Length: 123
Image (cartoon, rainbow, N blue to C red; front, top):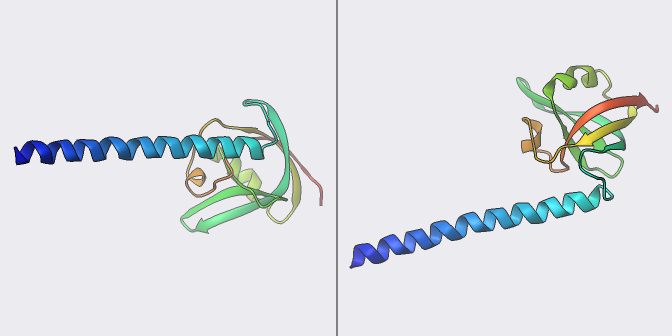
């Protein structure tokens, strides 16, 4: 009898832990969508900001910090090489927001993951 109560207790705890994680992710997604100004998924959006390099060797990654201090991860990583050279310039990026976080930088940057289409140096 004690064993049955013990098993039922852990099943109940296990089920409640996973439901909390899903709710939290849904709330964060709604907040990020509202911060983007209602941008449609898959549509190109212009972001004005700077290239920022995060981490220390050998675990560095490139992100974008916009004028409102939102930090965006860049995907795919092949774009990072070209953007590293632009650090220190104010840029106008044309980006597409990804539906879900991707890449190493998305683990640390909460603004979302973007694919950079074009950029233009402002100063």
